[in-house]
Image (tube, rainbow, N blue to C red):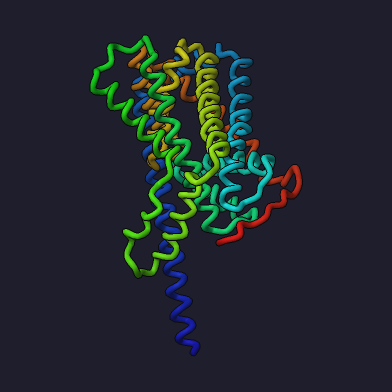
Length: 338
């Protein structure tokens, strides 16, 4: 008996060390990518030029950009409240606002923007939600945000007069993508989708329950669905406004419509788990995108660092709430189904 227990203990210890080693290895690789990209960038663009722009930046406009980020989190609670309710999770908007700030804090620490989804899932569990309900809420909220990102970015791309003439094929492709996004957002998915799954299998019950939860969004009343889509659009435009404000703070003259499509592409790049807190990827992406509308490389890097600094400000607020527990306990009712 002792030898059997010790054998299991050794195996568990090896598994734990192996898992920890893989985590450290992935984090180290992403840190290496961030450091490498920043090293190459700062070899081309002198730090003194970036520091000069930062020295003459407008502190008032920068603070306005941070304030917009907090406002955007508040706007995000409008559609999120409807989505969580559709999954049987009853949370107040105050609780959802606090969760969004906490996730910003953990996303800053964890490598890659995709890790934020895992942090959000854990916060829902902490507030009493079932695993299935929490997973469906995260997936639906992320899917709605991405599907809204496409038409908003396309509108800015088409209206941007600083770009060269758009190839007809590209314009048609973007409009086709917008139509697909609208259909995915609004029209119900086929209920017989589960009939195509294998009749038996270890994961079939869990997948069936998850798909049923995901299709709950399309089965919402029209008023609730309009609230989710409208709130997501308002939140995205608010994020564009915050990004534009950070540009104005460091003296980057860029049109609002330009930021609409630039932010869409930037967010897509940041979804890839390639770096820590988006460092390096954000700067290189903005240098390339800014070149399309005549933004100098040094100004693009200063803009990127202003965006990062604003995100750090919001993340620190989330961290303070996590550590202090202020404003007190926030009760939640768990979902009826796991």
